[in-house]
Figure (cartoon, rainbow, N blue to C red):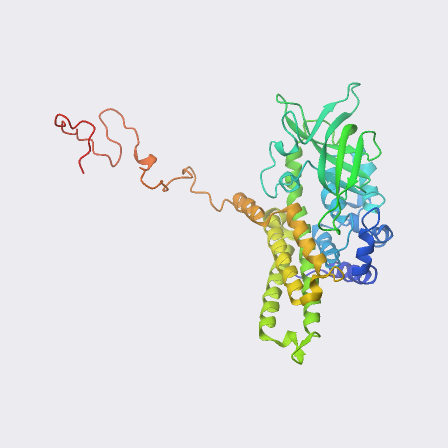
Length: 441
């Protein structure tokens, strides 16, 4: 296997890095997050028109570039380096693959070309903080209870009284780019107890009953919104209400994790580069602090961590099904550690709002809150890999007994006249009067 990037992938990286270096510096990022959209709309149109960024992984028949997940991961690594606020993850990673997988021919033809061209942005709205669960990153999404099962909670769906379309009621509180997206993919619970199921719906933001509000988030570079649906009209995504929505979401989860891992690795690499440059110029006791052995050791540990996380992210982009969740866990942990050291090694200036070090720290904390936490990502990956499963047919508690108790597996009932293996069938002698119930040791 050739693990090197192709010339086309290197060209995507080089072109995107040059463009973002010129137009997405720290000051530009701060200005972009304070706009109504939460990102630089002219820059997004340029990335879409000149580089085809949102359509990199979409087929050419829908106006995409026809590349794959690896090319999109390369682009995400570069946007992560710049901490670029953009609807790329929400549109290209969350919404477009679900529309392509579940949408009807008319829905795909109407939406995917506009998404690929950057004319339309989209996002996935799930109730509460259940986005990583819906994508199968921290648990099994089957059953769809996270979508609002039961009588209350989440988002509830029912067919419209006139028989055309559906009506949604409920809210999603942490929707990436939900305040600016041109189309919402809403996961809702339908059918009640007899036919309980989770469905996906297309909701236009200008539909009556849709209320969107941008939230004040820890990480301003990844805007979040609250979406309220007050008996809002919606269009079912797909041909009927028997589609395996939870399966489609679970299939979309590993590629999303791979792209997020690439983005986190890019942010960690950028933070490390800035720190190395700073310690080479900051002087104490008449010499750069980067010449001190303790600082060298800390930077060396960060370098090894970033390179390892990048290798994991690259492998996840090549094989997301087996490595997506683990790569995301490793990348998020690496970004958190690198961002914390960036603040520390910058000294007093690293704690100020004017310095960009805090942007990396907030990206690390915000992503782990939105897509993690890390220990649950690893737990889910271990569960899927069967790392802690015993031999086939073995009880999970075999060989483990509570202190002072007998092993339940030892007391195997035997047929009349036959002893269970390892059990003495010799009748016990009659006990002396007054000793019934006693045990002699």
